[in-house]
Amino acid sequence: MDLLWALENFDLRALIDILIVAALFYGVSLLFRGTQAVALLRGTVALLVGMVALSQIFAFQALGWVLNNLLTVLAVAIPIIFQPELRRALEQLGRANFFGGAQVTLSQRAELIDEIVQAAEKLSERRHGALIVLERDSTLSDFIRTGIALDSDVSAQLLLTIFWPKTELHDGAVIIDRAGRLAAAAAVLPLTASRNMPNRKMGTRHRAALGISEVSDAVCILVSEETGKIVVTQGGRMIPRIEEGRLRPLLEGFFTAPPNPYVNPLGFARQRLRQWSARLQRRKTPHGGREGAP
Image 1 (spheres, rainbow, N blue to C red):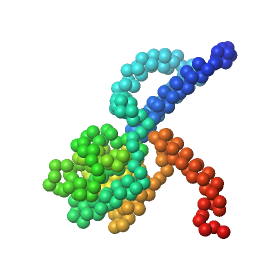
Image 2 (cartoon, one colour):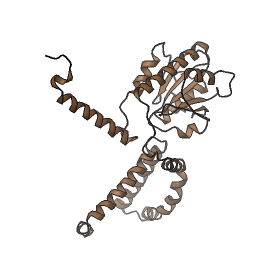
Image 3 (tube, rainbow, N blue to C red):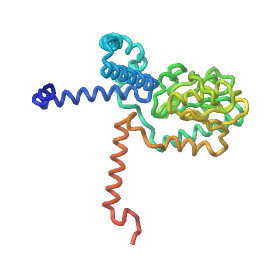
Image 4 (cartoon, rainbow, N blue to C red):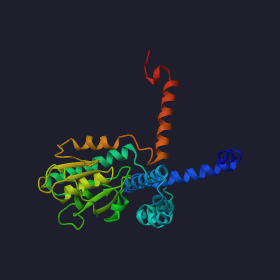
């Protein structure tokens, strides 16, 4: 009966109402994607679904009573548990940056990688410890807040100055945001709890580099103070002892990967439109667009 009533009353107003609700849910899902709360949210949903299934299948009265009264508890618990994500959402909405921040062009990215490689190689020669974190899809705003805000252009000279042992900002990490700006220095990173370290004698800097790669998709470049070796971490993995000339193609490989459509759907859609337009143009051009073709 409810289904028949819904079909009889379905009109343009109902369609717009459904689309607005769907857009709201989609927007909320975008706020949690790429954050540390995703795993917690998935676990919570899985637990609730399992409890509802048990209550309905086996007719558990006590469990059913708990579920019926759980909404009041969730109304209080959710704002507390997801307070950082909700605060970030309101900040992004206030800055009109809901669908993601600025993205660097290919030429800007190449220049950025060049500056980082120059700094890392000189830091390795001087054996000055360093941590350089490159933000990708996952937001690092929580870790940026722990450091000293800079919001400056990235240059090899600036990175060398920051990580000079006598300076105030050398102890910590430099975070470069996805817009290619040096967002913060002396930032505090989470330490890994993994027991699969390549060498258990590795210090706090190595554990921090591996830790940030476990909680985000960021790329971290580490320069060891003891050995001068360059290490790269990403996705919870450590690539030790980067040889000279290998760091540049490694970073280029990380930043030429296909974009995540869930993090910046507008940017992803624009890129797809450009690709389709280029394909249509090639099809319209005689001989596949090759000059001098017979």
